[in-house]
View 1 (cartoon, helix red, strand yellow):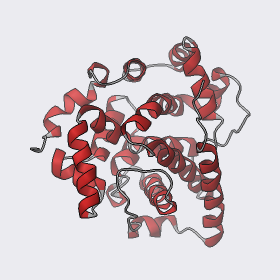
View 2: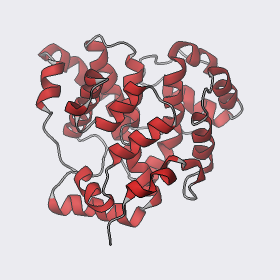
View 3: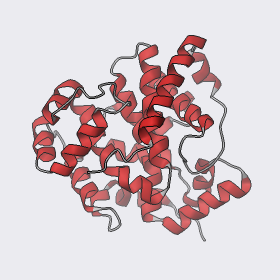
View 4: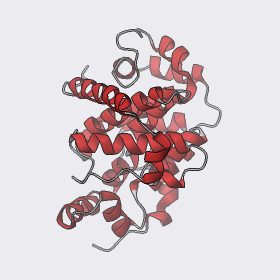
Length: 280
């Protein structure tokens, strides 16, 4: 197959609520998130109007990734604790869950584990708003979902090429789309008015040295992604375990005690992801 210049289709990708292959719930959520100046009250009413979505949000916010296990019993409580940026990301996370499992078996397990590890690292480093870093971990591979939904045969070719040549999936994506999933995730995060730090983490999680606004946050998700791959948790499009970028390794400066605590959190998230988190 001929490569697709995905950059020429950026507007199409950004207007995801108009894409024919995207499920209805995701379209509605992306339309809400893309509304300039959307408020917590509007989001709260939107969630409350969908009992199934309410259940999914509460199950997610009480999961290991967010550090409030069993303590949050209402959407209004979740919104009060987490704030607008995290709730927007949370909504997006629960809406892509089913798509992740349909387009790439194991991607949800990988993403949930990265979210849990990213939060654990952020807490160890004393980073402000670790929940936002957890959201970035959850959504770091969003671009893969969109590529698979819209260009499935070509994306399957990318995964086959990555396996045959033993190269990272991002490299195979670049060859077939002239961009990779990180760039597409960045486009969408900008379109949905996520904070600049979160946009940068999603866009540069494979190139943490390129981060300017959020180098620590980007290094955290970069490290979390690699640690989860090394553990063999889930599947993210290839079976390789990259080396942690030297700049990220130096910036994080994790000690042995830090790593032990982070690994405990990782195992906890994997135990949780064995079951159908969003079964209703």
